[in-house]
Length: 139
Ligand SMILES: [Zn+2]
Image (cartoon, rainbow, N blue to C red):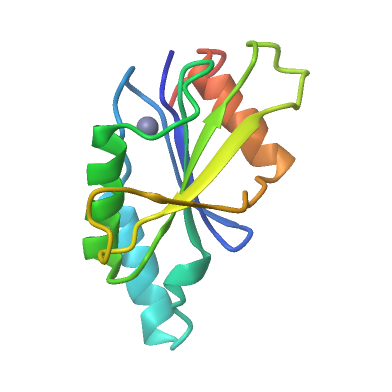
């Protein structure tokens, strides 16, 4: 199982990753450039920056590694960041169903992620995450 991930800024896709099993990864360089480009235009809003990543079936809760990852994103972006965990019930690419939990990191509560209402993912992104996670495609 590959823990693929996708970063969205509103409806725009910033990065897609998914090369290694059991690893939280993202392309910091791409994120950085994307942020700088928007900042230069005066249009940077970290509240609509969302990190989605896939966990193995049934593991719809964050790990210590996830908490550290969310802290890292918070430091890098300088703001609370939306952090989402996605699971699938099977590897059927035609089944669009997915499970989702949404969190964010707030430095006033450094030991946990705060849960809030799910922010749904578009069907294209769901398809990509599933295809990467189950090895139908590789990057
Ligand atoms: Zn995770």
